[in-house]
Length: 313
Ligand SMILES: [Zn+2]
Ligand SMILES: [Zn+2]
Image (tube, rainbow, N blue to C red; front, side):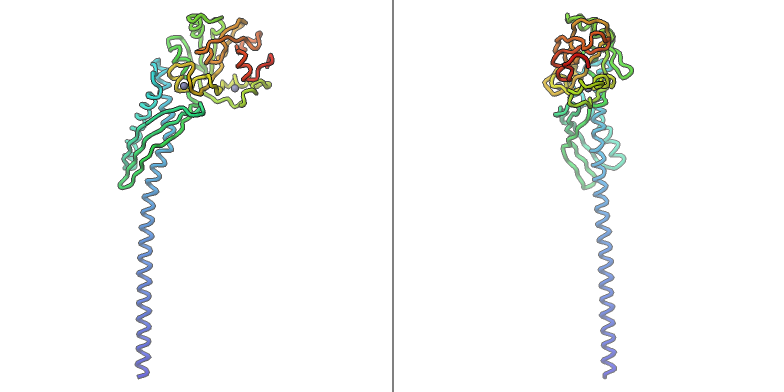
């Protein structure tokens, strides 16, 4: 009897142990499966998130390309009548191509539409709003994506948009060479001393002047360096990039100005050389250094802005 009950106890204990082990095994297997499924889920989420991030991060490159497409149109001698619409059209075309590429590569469906291209409080940046729908299986991304695109490094379209390619303007060595185009324009409008602007030059590419505040242009060597590098300056009177594309020398938006540099022995009063003055505001200035062929012709308010009030710099 005693042996029997001992045997029963052993058998019972063994059975309980086996059942417990089995339960642990089932639990472990289920857990592993569950964890694996979790991973698979988050992997496909990551994949979709990666596609969306990749697409939106590359938007700025396409946006700049769309702006440059409008600039190229101006340089091809064609007028850009509404720069915002032109850039929107260019960007939609670029994005359509990209959407197709993504569909092939990632098996996603992408719909995009450029809603607007606007000025920002910085003249160096334009704000794009793009409506975006991205779908893959049952995952969806739907949003109006807002991105800034910089105009730095793009060409200044104003001189050609304003005077046309037929005027004889040339672009080489990173510069705009006005040749006789500006003086012809000045003769046409009866401005003083048009001969002063024969062979005038200006920088071709938009570069933001680092000498800020601008009053430091009066410090020794700064103006020389600014001219050598062909920097552009923020200006409430100068026109913004969108209006430059349309050939407007002046606009209500916050924009920039650049010096049109004359190279002449003449010492007469002539148009002050800030580009919004030459192309729109039309008031006179004088050479800062009358004996220097390359001296800027500037009016008193621009001299003040750039710290050139005292004679010489
Ligand atoms: Zn400067
Ligand atoms: Zn404007």
